[in-house]
Image 1 (cartoon, helix red, strand yellow):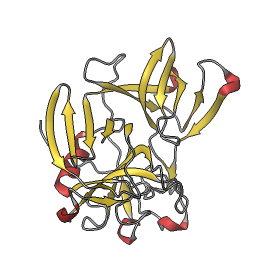
Image 2 (cartoon, rainbow, N blue to C red):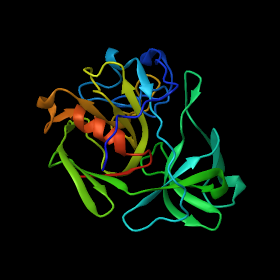
Image 3 (tube, rainbow, N blue to C red):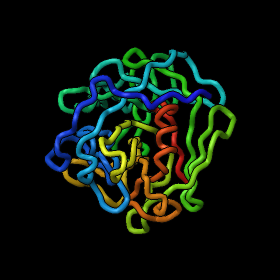
Image 4 (cartoon, rainbow, N blue to C red):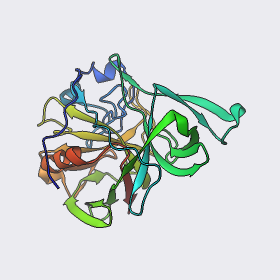
Length: 272
């Protein structure tokens, strides 16, 4: 596979002071980032440090629309507008609610969800919110479905992250994970956001992905809700240790490769 430079957001903006109040805060950092830096959470403390206050939000280029997944692939639902109506039961208006895309300093972020099932004119999706693994139904006309053959598996006890493309194992790397008091939650999630901190030598490295996962211990911090992330670090001594508040750490060169190749919506399975 040909590796190009990490994608750059054309309209990248500086984040406001994270603790001042925008959007969502990760147990590690901000990633949903609705409020942008709130999603990433890092290891040694909850919330963004000074190095993460200013960051760039990254969008991926569109990929081709496909109507159904194939083996070893997944579908991501990209909401067409700034909000989408989510239903508990397909077609039941009494059991629906509005899910809005997050806004960062006037910029609407992509709203992407992992597809779990499809029926005529309806799509079942995993939602990027608490409780972990929450699902709902959206109208297929409200989203664009995009095929993805990348997937990620994280083994917490082995301190390893495995990446796959289709049936092939592409890479495996050492990671740092949550401490015993702030463990990384197990389960099946997906990548929701990507930011590029201004300081590549800071707490969150050169890039940080947000996950649909949220800490089971940290339920709030600032204006955020304890969202978990995968982010870089230039301190390799923290890898292969229980060091974070729930987030997954990888080396900067590794997160840069992930940023080049993983589209939002990529499935991430976290196991013991």
